[in-house]
Amino acid sequence: MGLVLSTWVIALAQPGSIDSVKLLQSASSDTSRVTILNQLSFKYLVSQPRLARQYADEALALSRTSNFKRGEIEALNRLGENEFRQSNYANAVDYTTQSLKLAEQLRDTFNMAKAYRVLGNIHTFGFRQYDLALQYQLLVLKIYEKTKDKRNIASTYGNITWIYASTNRNLQEAHRLADRGANLADSLGDKQLLSYNYNSKGLIFSQEGKSDSALRYLDLSILMARESNDRAVIAYDKSIKGNVYLRMGDFKKAIEMFQLASAESQQLNAREVLKQSYEGLTKSYAALGNYPLAFKNHLLFTALKDSLLNWETAQKAMITRLQFEEEKREAKIAELELANQYARNESIIYNALFGVVLLSLIAVIVLVVRNSKQRSEGNKLLKEKNEEIAEQNRKLKEANDVKDKFFSIIGHDLRSPLVSLKGLLGLLMRNEITELEFKSFAPKLHHLVIGTNETLENILQWASAQMNGWNHTPSLLVVHGHVSKCFSLFAEAAKAKEIALVNHVGEKETVYAETNQMELIIRNLVHNAIKFSSKGGSVQVTTVRIDELLELRVSDDGIGMSKELVESLFQKRAARTRRGTEGERGTGLGLILCKEMVENNGGKIFVSSEVGKGSTFHVLLKMEK
Image 1 (spheres, rainbow, N blue to C red):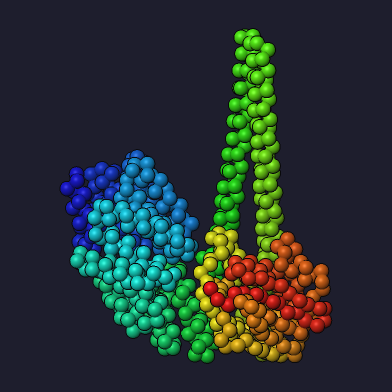
Image 2: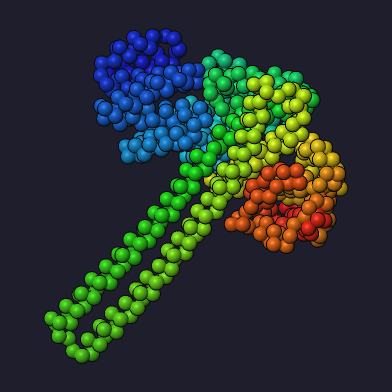
């Protein structure tokens, strides 16, 4: 039996060498059929994912019917990897976790390593939880180094270097591991593994700004991936090449690469690569001044990004967290009940001894005092535990109240502009309004799209923070460039309201903060200033040095705020919507996010405002590490 199975494995490693149907017909038992199905699923994973999924589903059903545990573990692992490649991360985690639990029960370290590897990849490419992903991959490497499994060691090197390259850290170690992985793959004659490690080298050089070296290794990776028929790697490589060309300023070449990556990833349903391609096309077309195509790709990017980080995932994460808190609460209640039962048992024993033994009066007094003391301590502990549970229930209720308020705001303010946009486009499609009439709505439509996009960005940032906590990888940032970038984003919106955008920030002024969070802080404050400024006004961004801090001020001469509104501005419970000077919508979520992100970077935010005279938002951040 072992000889037959090993022959099947060798045959499956050579695509097209044996017809799959004939191979399945040759299976002499359910276990051998499950083994063949799992091998076929692995064979077609990178080239025909739908067929690979079909084989894995059949293997899982048959292994469970025949109680073939190792076959079930392998089938679950194949399904997890298939779902991961389709960016269905929730399903991928579910299947892989089931596989890991069964492997742990059987003490099957080989399949445990497979499950850890898939979980590591999910947390790398899906959840962007790189520290946890690195822990999984290091566990995988430890198992394979013990078994001296060269092929899987080379594969794991590629996964680890991807994490280092994606986070732009330990790049020297990343180069070392990628080179070792490439040498191992070359010695084994495994072109697929070569493509993985060349891909990592290309990404590392890209992070280092060495464009020529990055392109050379990415081309090598594509060549190896074509020979091993791994279309997913080809799509990734082309997407990375597009970003390299974009950084070099070769926008036409960048568009070519992103279009090829988009076509490949659509066929494979590799939605992460597709999302990156849409984003790259948006930037490239915008750089060439082709704003209709830039806008079209931006809409595709936003829609896909929203679907990948949808509310269902956020809700599942919050439900899981609440369930975890509930489990802790139930465990504490059980602990208290056990303590009470122990106290009751002690009381019964003491009373029985008192009645039966008839100890002397001194002994009776000692026992009574001792029992009273223990009861007092037990009651004190019980009171403390009950107070702790009450405090946890209060916090859970507060968290639920905040969550419900946010969902209410978002459900109303996100749906309304999309319904308006849908209605306007419907009129145009049915020729119920002329093109000239449609163009008259263009400024309002532009405001609508920018406002909806800002709402989506804020929602996704908030949902990500609820699932993963705030990312904190700060660096030294030049503030002037980020303000200019923000002004470019809102230039059309400001022009439509005849609002002047003034950047008074010195070109050498710096702060020590996380890049994406700093951009979102500036973007929300400038957008708010434009929204609540009257026609013909101005929005100014200035900086003032205060000891070791840099104060960033975003000022407008708009409608201003009352003292009551200023006091409730950054409170989650009091989050409210307020329309801008031309009816622009808002959720109140942006300023709450600003406060959390400023504090996450060790800073402070406050506002000074007067009704009818405008507002100034003050952000204090450190200038150095």
